[in-house]
Image (cartoon, rainbow, N blue to C red; front, side):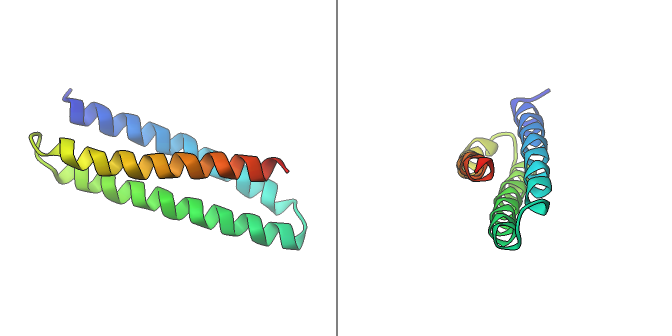
Length: 96
């Protein structure tokens, strides 16, 4: 298996974990008051947007040649880091 394929598998596994985390946030939001629920749903929507961004970058990576995928990987990593930070921030908000 190529490094590109290994990287894609690793990223998809990480995205699956983060999507499961977002599902937990949804469950917590459903039990909150209306105002809190609205705020948490905005947060969830933003996280979903970031997941979409990572998926778009991964699609670009899948279309890249073996020689060119390294430069596209940087964009994927940047989107992933942004999502990771947003997930951490959301965890802190959802603990309140």
